[in-house]
Image (spheres, rainbow, N blue to C red):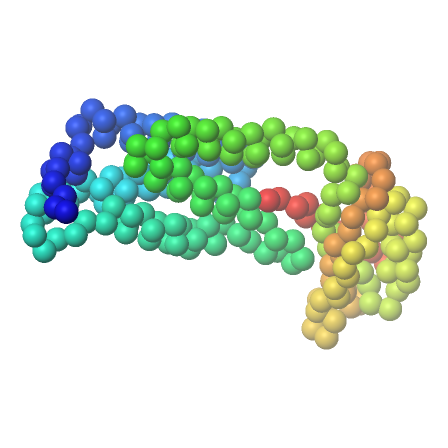
Length: 243
């Protein structure tokens, strides 16, 4: 059975192309705005560029080679370039993932970049409903569910504390006792620079990195003030989780 070739399938009007690109810009910016307000590395403009670029690529894949569609030895595959976007966006997302000591940040931002790329592909392909609904669900997940998560799990939030303690002092034992009193549970403890310690005055300084969890509601700032006054503690620094 012979199939009738319809060359109009491989053509798109300038008006329709403009609508798709503008919609990709709006939806990508909507998701990027939440990341920008949260102070993350990939924010408003980054998400717009990823979504818009993905839309341009799928438009190119579908309609950019229309002049060759009638050639007998040419087979057009609209999904070929789109598939490369899905795998290639991982490199950009990996750049937003950072590890600082025991804390890993940027995972949610990397995921949002991957999702916004798929939204751009959907818009470029003319899958408007799926792109709009997907964008709304992403915004709900990032903004509203993030607020709800903070409200329900604030007392269970993980933090990282970096202490500078004089080597040979009883400061570490006192810190553990103080933390139990404030409802702070130690999940992981790492001692760094034990052999090549920095020196402040005549005392060797150990860097002790702790990953802790708040077991009960309370003022974490008050606990830090109390911990900083423990004998032998020469300084501390806190790093909260940021996804």
